Image 1 (tube, rainbow, N blue to C red):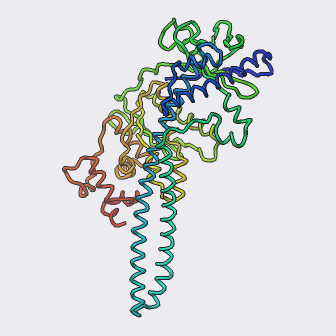
Image 2: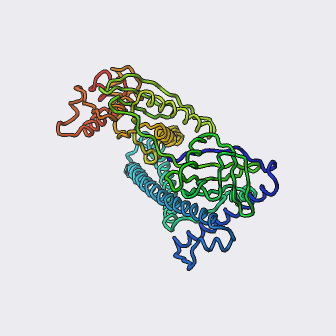
Image 3: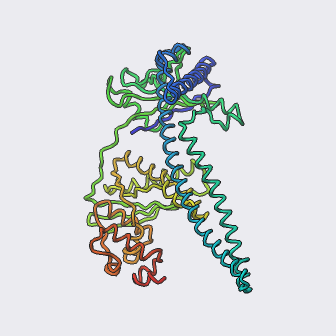
Length: 490
């Protein structure tokens, strides 16, 4: 597990001209080596271009530096190329799924179009035999013709979309697109911003060997001075790290060639000033929670998180709602809101010594299936920051030593609605979190007596709940509470 520690700001106008010039030149030099290394690796990977001399020796000879700058640039270029290859594979998979979904939609619309055209042909045949009435004429003009026109328009739009997605897939199958450092958009619209984006950061990996955990950045703990070994001269910076500073000091003080001693430093240019970011490898804490104490289940929703506390017998101890107001906020405000909510949940787990149970959801697939739903639902799904929320919770849990248990999300809301909403006096989402918490420590949900008429004895429990879901459908909570039979005649 990695943690970050940020330094204070270093303004260029406060530094001497020699120091400022040295840092700016090294940023340009490092990024030039990074771009060259990426291009060489790209040609080797996708076009089979091979050189007799190693890439590190080529960069060292071309730019006239020591071994540390080229090795750092090659390390980052390889990571970037690997990331682009994985992104390409993911995009191809998503594009293939979209094509399948569009074809299904076109097939469905064509069937509907054929039915309407069949009705129109019957009306035309009827008119040829002089058997039409005024009602037939109005039906053809007001209903049949508009529907045929609308369906043809839909099929045309879907065909255009299918062609676009097919072209995208063919383009992705050609291979990974070459990277444009600084973004193509800024290249065409703002050259100054484009040049800044191309040279704004420099990442130097750490090293376990040696005293200072890094080859180019030497952090002297006693004096609080960071010595940067530039290409022209050494730069001495009075530095102070804030968050996780004690972890950084512990890593630097570790003995030579010890696991966890390496510290990577990233120098990030912000225009008027720059900062130094330390990246430390930290071992995750030992799991401090126990299933014997019970569990805490959460159900993540668009605007809130439902939380349910249960004991080891599976009985409800406490329930709560944690609101998440993300709509209309900036990216940093959303990030802060999510982090605060995650901290509250993990604090409860630490305080009660209970593991956290959550659903293993994949919203990318759900968004694909909901592609042709109403605008409001599509907008809600696109704004739903489920991945960010779950990632923040898991990261905080690993840091605090809380076990995270992921369960199958199938039928949790329906089970909660049918079994616990009325008995426990809670909402559907709170009932779902209660079911999730029970699932996490091994409890299974039995079928209620009034719903056993819908299931077979030989079916598994998941198949039984699936059968109940098909029969009951989208019955309201009140209908489900009264009787199972009433839900069938809604």
